[in-house]
Length: 428
Ligand code: SDX
Image (cartoon, rainbow, N blue to C red; front, side):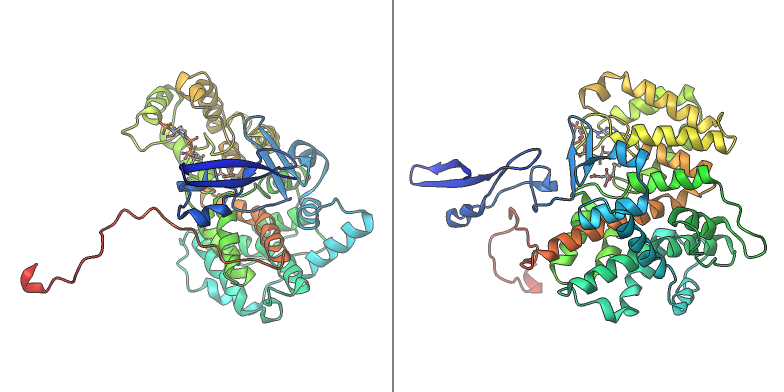
C-alpha cells in the first residue's frame, strides 16, 4: 500500500501522486500521473530527483553515513579488501571462502590486455593527461571483446564486468609508465590486486619487485573508499549511456569522461594544485576569503558535497590512511599535509563553512596520500576511475538486469523564441 501526495494545479486539475517508501532514507513521489496534466517537473542538477531505484549504495548526507549493500564503509575499509567489496557490490552479498576464491581467480584471468592495445598509447604525446588516454583505451576495449557485447545476455554482462575490473589497473599503470618513458609492466597474478597494481606502476623489468604491505593495504583502502557512491554524476552518466543500449566499455568510458571534471573526481588533483598554490599557512585566510567571495569562481577544493552536509565518512578514513602512508614513506612532516591540516582546521571553524555545511570530502586527503606514494598529480583521478569502475558497472548491471530499461530522456523548460518565419539575408 502506498500513500499518495495530492497535487492541485487549479480547481479542475488535480493528481494523486503515489509515494514509494525507501528501505532507508527519503521516500519518493512518483510523478507519472503528471503526464495527464501537461506539466513537467523542474530540477536542474537533479538534486531532488530519484532517477532510479537501486539497492547498491545508501548515503545519508546528514548523518555522514555510507553503506555498500548495507555494510558501513568504516567496517569495510577496516575489515574487507577491494576485491571482496567488488564481489559485494556486484552480487549483493559478502562472498564465502569458495566464492571469494573463484571470483579472485576470474579477475586474475583477465588482467592482461590485448597486445594491440599497447600501440594505442603511441598515438598520444608523452605528456597527454592520463584521463584522456584512459577515455580512449577503455572505449577502445569495445573493439576487442565482441564476445561480450550483447548487453541482454547476463553472462556477457558479468564477463564484461570482470574484464573491466581486471584490466583497469593494467591500463592505468600503462598510462603512468608511458608518461615517464618506462616499459609497461605485465600483471603478475601471484600478487593480490592492489599489490599487482603497485608492481605495474613502480616495478621495472630490470629488478625484482619489492612490495610494501603498508602501501598495498593503503591503496586497497583507497580503492574501497572510492568504489561506489550512489547516483553521482559519473554513475548517472554510465546509467544514461547504458539506457541507450551502448556497450559496457563505451559506458565506462563515458563515466571516465564525467569523473574527470574538477567538481567531481578531478577534485583530488585540484586539491593538490590548490595546496601548492596556497603554499604556506599564512596565505590560508586570503584563500578562505576567495572561497567565500561570490564574485570569485575559486572554491576550496576537497570541501563541500552535494549530498554530505556532515563530514564525508570517507574523508575521516582517508585522513587515517594518509597518516599511515606518510609515516611509512618517511614524509610525516610533509609540509603539504601540515598545510592541509591547518586549512581543514581553519575552514571548519569559519562561519561561512559552518553555515553552508561544507566539510572535507574524500578528495581532500586522497591527493596528499597518493602524492606521498609517489603517484603524480595527473594520475589521481585515474586511480579514482580505477576504483569506481566496479560501482559504475554494478549500477549498469542493476539497470539492465531489470529487463525493461527505457532510454533516459529528460525534458526541459523551454524559454526560447516562439515559432517565427525565416528571414531572407537582404532583410536581416
Ligand atoms: C566527489 O556526488 C558524489 O557523490 C561525488 C563524489 C563521489 O564519490 O562520486 O562524492 C566525489 O565529486 C566529491 C566532491 C569533489 N569536489 C570538490 O571537492 C570540488 C569543490 N566542491 C564544490 O565544487 C562543491 O562543493 C560541489 C560541486 C562538490 C557541490 O556543489 P554544490 O552542489 O553546488 O554545493 P552546495 O549546493 O551544497 O553549495 C552550497 C553553497 C553554495 O553557495 P550558495 O550558492 O548557497 O551561496 O556552498 C558553496 C556553494 O557555492 N560551496 C562552496 C564550496 N562548495 C560549495 N564554497 C566554497 N568552496 C567550496 N568547496
